[in-house]
Amino acid sequence: MLTFLLLSAAIHAASGRPELVWKYETSGLIAYSSPAVSSDGSMVYSGSTDRYVYALFAENGTLAWKYETGASVYGSAALSPDGEWLAVCSQDSYYYYFSARNGTVKWASYIKARPAATPVFSSDGSAVYAVANLIVALSVDDGSIVWRAICNPTYWSESTPALSQDESTLCVGRADNKVSAFSTVDGALLWAFETGYRVYAEIILSPDYSLVVAGSSDSQVYALSSGE
Image 1: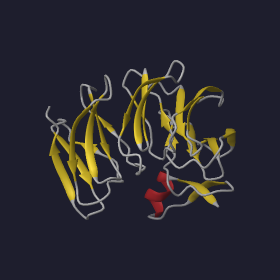
Image 2: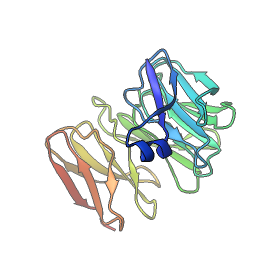
Image 3: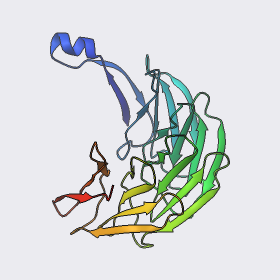
Image 4: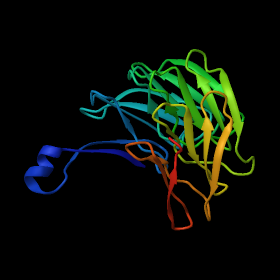
């Protein structure tokens, strides 16, 4: 399966058509996640259903490193604020924390669920929030679970969560039709709003953080007051 395509913006602007710069092939699909790109544009990171996490040089698409997890990797990789670390979830129920430079695993945290959503870092990089049929806050020091909040044991959420401006609240879309807000201090449920069907898409906050915007599989877009 063909995975990454980098297009030359300069050639695209000149010709009006994108031209392939490079491509990299894995043995699985990258149908559920988006590649992450380092802040300096030098590296591209992605998981695949072939169980691997890949790090590629953005200039030419050559492999920098790869790591085999225990199952398919559906969620997008997330880079820490300083760009030094990479958080990735796998269907083997582990969250992996890699050195972005060389792929060394600092820790792998078992969360007793099969996560598919992209993790989110706190702005200071001290915590990473993971979503499945539960929500967990993990310490980046050792991967220990700081708190755990159960959403609905029957439904696995795939929505990337969003942090409020003061980072006191984590807003999450859920496969049991709800948009919910949780305290980042202890995982307590602050509020929940029920839509007409499952919420798979990423939750978006308005620029002033006053609105929580979510798209639902009931064909509706919802704008909810965040309480800020």
